[in-house]
Amino acid sequence: MTELSPIVQLTDVSITFPGVKALDQVSFRMLPGEVHTLMGENGAGKSTLIKALTGVYQIDSGEIIIDGASRRLTGAASAQEAGIPTVYQEVNLCGNLTIGENVMLGHEERGWAGINWKKTNERAHDALSRMGLGNLDPRAPLSSLSIAMQQLVAISRAMVTDSKVLILDEPTSSLDANEVEALFDVIRRLRDQGVAILFVSHFLDQVYAISDRITVLRNGQFVGEYRTEELDRAQLIGLMIGKDFESLRSLGSNRQTGERDRSVTPLIAAEGIARAGALEATDIEVHKGEVVGVAGLLGSGRTELARLLSGADKSDAGTIRIHGKKTSLNTPVAGLANRIAYSTEDRRDDGIVGDLSVRENIMLAVQAKRGWLRRVPKREVDVLVKTYMERFSVRPNDPDRPIRLLSGGNQQKVLLGRWLATEPELLLLDEPTRGIDIGAKADIQETVAELAEGGMSVVFISSELEEVVRLSERIVILKDHKKVGEVINGPGVTAESIVSVIASDGAIASDGGSSVVPDAAAQEGDAS
Figure 1: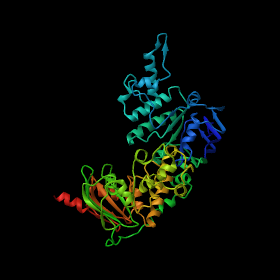
Figure 2 (figure 1 turned 60 degrees about the vertical axis):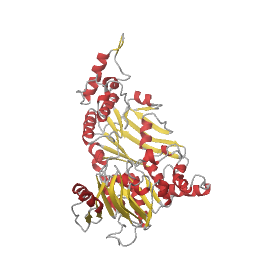
Figure 3 (figure 1 turned 180 degrees about the horizontal axis):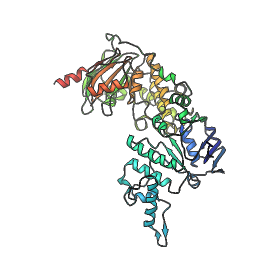
Figure 4 (figure 1 turned 30 degrees about the horizontal axis):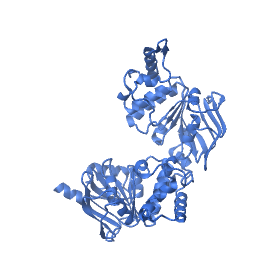
């Protein structure tokens, strides 16, 4: 079968920003009637490539060829004129307009008296029908549709000019499984019409479900182009992160096997801690060098527990002992004073300070611990910042860059550096790998394993049960704002077995030498 000529082609394209080469002689092509997925870690150059294709960024060198002709894209308008529409993760529609007005915005049918709304709505209906959305009334308000349906309307608008190219940047991030399948139906319909589709997603299952071809970028460079069916997932991940995927499988292999000596005084022991409306009476202890995982469904009380252990929230009941000594943790400052660091799950709103530099973000906790009147000497600042930026390979390597300009994975690395700079004995990590790519996840998971091996205690909270199981010696299980049991990790513990414990309120035991211990505080509460 003869391969068709590319509709869009980038040849040796480079883009440089101050201090970083975002794209380094990258080549990329899109063929008609194919879904082409762009893969890579956060910071690999995916967003930069898309912005080059959409005219947002000007290329420094190389060539962009569209329909066989070299084009210089000077902005979004010129990209649209060249037939390259984009639908972003955040739907850019007008909620105060009708469906038809949104579809035809800028392309309305006009007559001698102005816009001919009858013909405009007819064209909108035709555009929607081509997407399989002929059941939608163009005269209905856009606000009456779900986010998923609005996304399909945005695609209809992008294709109203019969473009032969469509860019979809993380289109499934806010969709459930049924909504994703509806979107995929539209993508397949467009593909079968000969449209070249660029698809960007972190979800591997979705990539393999919809893609015909995959291009991998790493560190701003082209790694390779592959037919999807010829590239298995382990190979893909290895190409993205630049290391053998088997290294991920070894994570946690150094964790202590078998149960610890519980007669040794734990680093921290909480007994019956509770907060009205947030967490029922709960016991938890963490020993030196131990990783304790916290598992549970959304709303189970995972974050609430972390906040009580860190002093971010004040407990209504119970006691907390650090090294056997009863301690009051009423504020985050009290937590820091007791060498407890808490990395919040809300990286954007409660973690980073977007307008501050990487340097300033790293130093925030150290300065807070010391007190704002005792400034950290510049030499110490420089050493700490350099240490943690190098340790976590923060990219770009520019400490004075505003942190909001970094990818999510690199922001998370900066936050981890912030808390490690305080030299904690206990590190509370709440969803540290949420929303970041596989490479950054691997880096953070490796760091957790190394910290525990070095003697630091870690409480690791994640909705991804596989990584909780991979890293933890023990797993505390929460449900409906209370602890229902603990699992001592072992060969028989899997994500599926943790789910079964949640479903059974800790009433069953796992196979393979592990055990499930129902929570005493929870049992007492149930008995009363």
